Length: 377
Image (cartoon, rainbow, N blue to C red; front, side, top):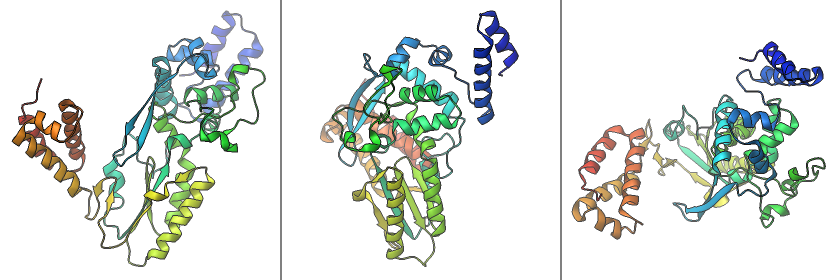
């Protein structure tokens, strides 16, 4: 609990002047009035002390100089292409986890947002659309990479943190943009007002949310909150349901008075809303599913009153378990071109664990078969 009297007494004992003490107390009170369960942060050194990291190292992360703050690599996407992952250095990751736990988690996200939330899931998101006659699915291109450092800064400023602290928090939660990035061609990604006082804080290009940082998922949901509200209201006005699971937007209509023209109008409206907020829809992935066609949301079948595992998903797990029993795990992993038998084992077990959220009975049968396999040590 924040006790200003205790702080004032301690500050005076350390020789701080009354003006500095009063300013610090006012700043803490301002933050607590905005959100009582959000911690106060007066300086970068204050943050370093709370987290338990070296302030000089934090400042280098903010400067984006000297330290290689992220380890970068890419992984293949299931549907082609590559996903770029950036893993923060240990001290930066520790700081991002602290920011996520104590500043971001207490803040509410929009009710339509389901990804990365403790009390939500793919099943809950998909269940909203069960029994739909029409389904419209839209994907946001380069989702994390579309959220800029200035948006993160504005979020922290909305919590009444001072501008410099908000800037430093934003820098700690974003990754620098390469000078060779296509972003340099867009005015909204260029810094127009440079910091003349702290030279190390001046950069030509704004950073963005790194995929792989522990703070990025929650930040994305909080920053998307106004956009979620706009999309929710657009859907509500047209009689549709709306959910967002990270970069997957889904709209459904459950009555008969809807047609292809209505669906096209909705898609156009969503494109406009996304573009006005600085996001790009991946038009190649936009899907309109009419009555009579198979409806899949986030990999789950939603044609009944509750989400079910899709037939291709079930067939794939059944085939893996059948052929492992027939040929053995090593031979099957070679036939299916897995990098290793342990990679295949992890993949199948992950599928079974996912199935447990949707169809626990089926998952239990698969798990029994999985556990009977004589896996190599």
